[in-house]
Image (cartoon, rainbow, N blue to C red):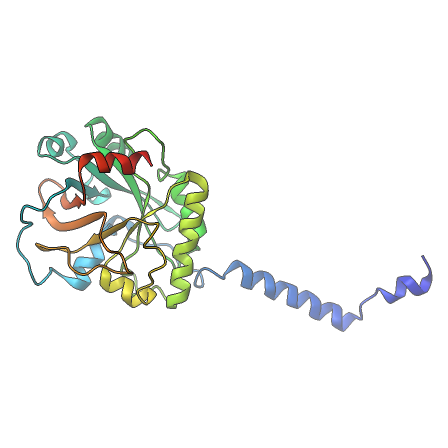
Length: 278
């Protein structure tokens, strides 16, 4: 190679420095495209469970009252808040499925998960795990991987429901975790993408109509693929978010027998079993 060829490929020092800075900026931007700036990990994750912030922000439905003869399959959802659960008591009362909180953010694991997840299975229930999302602490992809690594997986055994993502009011600050509507949708999409790539299943989405409208602009792009689990405490399910025509699971009370949170699967036991089998 000639001296001329070698020197023609050299970059002036100033341009080289600028080029390095541009690359560094590009790397930073690409790594944070789906998450707000990192914030400290949750400080009271044992108090954060499916519906903990719904009741706080939305209260009871105006219709109030008890659930009246709605068809479907009875279920419950639990977290470390309930500690060791009396699964045999729930099974005898007619409960046939359960969702158990497994994780929150990218650092918290439910210390009672084994008793709750395995205990419901041994009692003869169909069970699944859910993740309490904190979109301001890390990306959707990161939290999906953490969930999968700590109890959120799925198996085709007919007794395991697909994982659920709990999207609700921020227990630690800004309602929408500091994300714009589009960034929130992107965060959820990334969580869904990673989970499906690993399990082949579409995540069940837990969210309230009010929160979804506020924080995603009532985005409707997930309605055809992701089952909806909606909280609404009263005698009817109320309006649904995001263009869903029906809910798959309805969390209808936070004051049910034995554990508090009770749910109703919108269909027969055979359809619940079909959801578990995939």
